[in-house]
Length: 306
Length: 98
Image 1 (cartoon, one colour):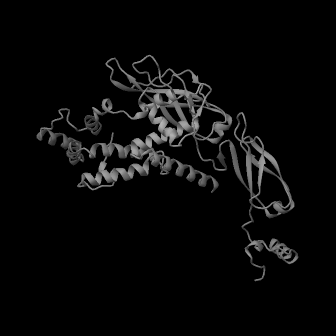
Image 2 (cartoon, chains in turn brown, green; image 1 turned 90 degrees about the vertical axis):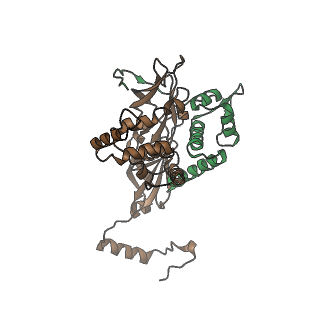
Image 3 (cartoon, each protein chain N blue to C red; image 1 turned 60 degrees about the vertical axis):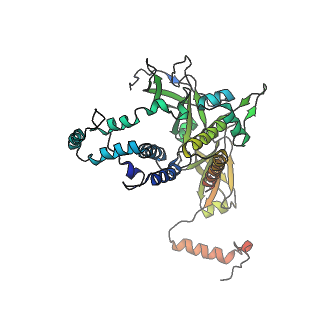
């Protein structure tokens, strides 16, 4: 474990007052709370800030930490110095992890996060939209709380392979009965997993419906066309009717996520023009401008005059 | 920490389930009055089944977890947590439209 500068984590100077520490913590906790935050890596940041605050909010722990940090740059030297100072922790504090454990030693027995009460375990898993569409299996690494013979709480790393049901929605919970921690009681807890579906480069998901923005050319929009479009099950042909406006929505029934009531694929047309100057095309547009009496801004109350 | 190497089974999971009030309180380690307060605040819509037992679905489960965590981690009260949840829903809706 590397030495962590808790002051830096909280954006504070070494001489910060206890009040400043508290204020910084409150602010950062709101910023990085995994349920609220849109920041990347919020969960780890939140844990890091929590750990920093745990030490810095307590003047005794903070003093210990400051003492340790002072000599951190040169660990061998730090070791000697601490002997001179007759450091009360007789294990010495040359190793940061050991040092932090000494600070946190009694915490686990005193307070546990609420989600570990009972022996149920709550976890999160991010999968792709395709994973949901096809169904998938994922291997999870979990830290399972386990009481040893002395009733001491310990964590065991367990990997389990989970079948993710087809058509699962974003933020849906799944349950695995009996896969939680085994407490002192006979009853094994359950494992709850919140499934998160990662953003897709083409499709947007709402419940079981899959949304696609479909670019079409002005002539496809005007004349109508049969074109190839992507769906979760591969390419299909779609008939664009004549005179289709940008923003028009079309629905492919049952092409969304599978389920008792399967979702649909909803397509929004978007007319795009070629980003290339073409003499011939320009001529045709000029002809069109001359032939067609068309004021696209009629509703805005402005005329076509230049 | 030991690594469990033997790992032959693929476990089936339940995609749709309902939890009773008792199961909800157990899994979150809170008492039933806490959950009832959350229901009464209008944060989750819990259904009652035939035998007049509360039934919490996946969405209720998720919302209760967020409320409890916001309460515990940020010290917000129920109304504050409810407000945060509604704003989060709103933000998500806007993102999806965008």
